[in-house]
Image (cartoon, rainbow, N blue to C red; front, side):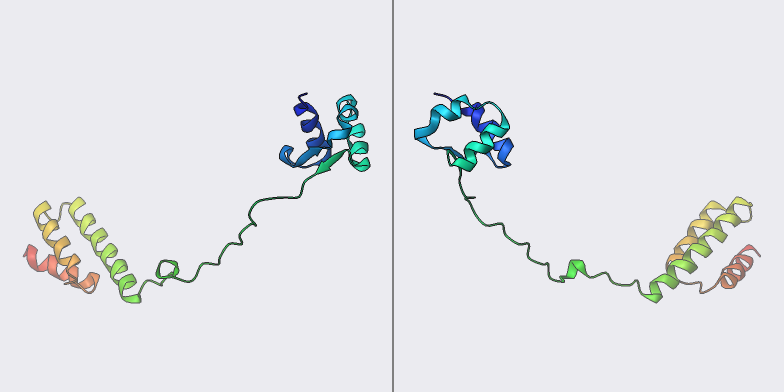
Length: 135
């Protein structure tokens, strides 16, 4: 006698999984005749349907992650921030000079190398260098 459909109805009516539903062997005829969810619930209250306890491993609680090197967010140093600001400013100015036709492509490459090597501390120094080279 296959009572899988009855187990499905019982699991939905009682709110548990199919594997936890167990029918008492002596009252299988009553269970077979039960059609509605209400009949299944009344059979559960009478003891014809038994719900097994939850089996299996206990749910592990997640371990809190320690503060490892990869979790530490460090501030970018002031020196690097200053370097980025001055480099962008100087490169932009050099690009404008190239677009205006004041300097050649090869000279621009040379200037960009010098900017990268931090030979110019300010925009004024860069202007003076360009004026000195153009004379």
